[in-house]
Length: 76
Image (cartoon, rainbow, N blue to C red; front, side, top):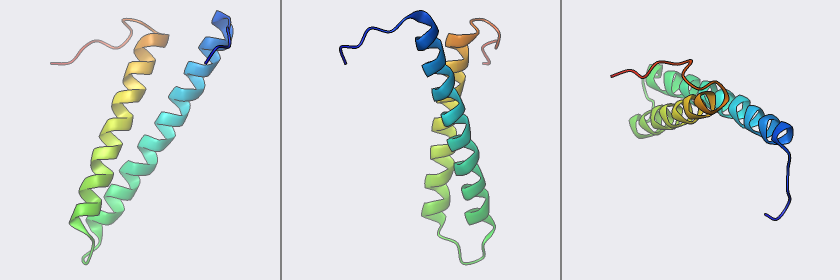
């Protein structure tokens, strides 16, 4: 990528990425819940959906920390 972007455009891109990752997190968590409730559900698919939900959640938290440093206290 050779395009030069200003800080406002960079901020907009990060905000769009955070919104997209948050939507993906919700989608995968809902899918994991749905697969986990089904009697004949595929446990492997439910586990994969749960892992993807956690991964997107981590991306959301990283992008939130970039956008609002120190707002979210570290847990652990």
